[in-house]
Length: 273
Image (cartoon, rainbow, N blue to C red; front, side, top):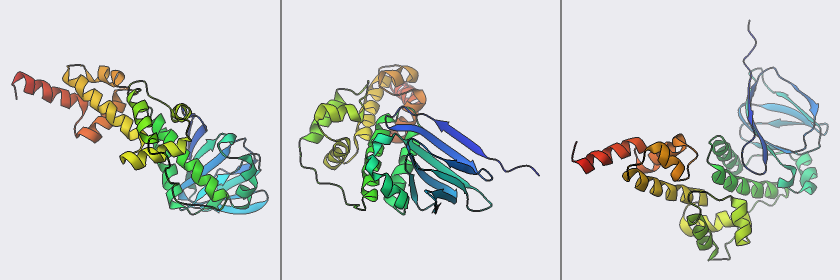
């Protein structure tokens, strides 16, 4: 009888603060005791995990978020014969204050649907080249929520005290439609915390900064397609990672792909059907 299939996928995304993305399906693999120099942020998609952290037994379930602190020994194994599927983000140690390591040792997991959904969204953004601003925005909100969980002080969104901040960020995004802008760079230029920027913009305009920037790029792409440029040329000229990146967002927003949009527009302009 063949051994159960076990799979691992790992990569380093172009997003500051995320040292590694790690997806795995394990059935028989057992982690020996080891440590990391990063925070390991774990969600389980199928099955369950058992692990010892600082000589205390814990479990990670599908409904939970698990955070393993840096420099603390832990192991890991499947809790059932069917194994488990997990997704892990290894966050640079400076993403959370190191004085919270003790709190993570005491309570490394929580049932927090909001946080789990945000982590799922971040994994999706990290798997798609060109979505760095979206990933940075989601990471900022996740970092804030983790800090609150570790301090046992989960609260609602902070009130926005600067009504002009969102407009200044919008102007900055408008000036960088093609070349893009990182969230950290925007925060430095506007002298604001990244999380506060995301919240202020979303509250003011009804969508987060990365979706606004994508919308502006789609507007530019439409104009370029109508000017007769090929989709591959438009993708680069409008600030998308590649043609596939353009096509995914264009179809979602316009209801048709860029190539079909261009062909239909050309036919209408020439009077053919």
